[in-house]
Amino acid sequence: LDEPTANLDSELTEKTISTLFEQNKDLGLTILISTHDINLLNDGSRILELVDGKIVREGLVSSVD
Image 1 (cartoon, rainbow, N blue to C red):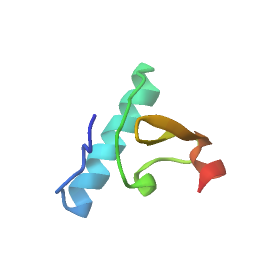
Image 2: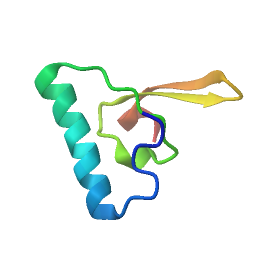
Image 3: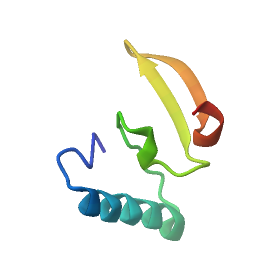
Image 4: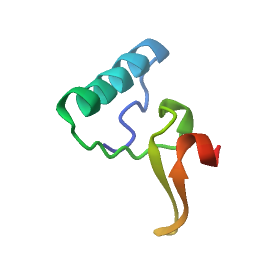
């Protein structure tokens, strides 16, 4: 998903992200989210930070804040 919460208000952003994480947990789906807002992600979410198409940082949300 590329910026799935772009231009959404805070309430709809929360519902969207919550639904995605429920799908991840309940169905075991891997969900790839492209976002500029790391605050949307849960602690423990794996992230890859890209700059010019290259991975410059990788880890769990809580370890790269």
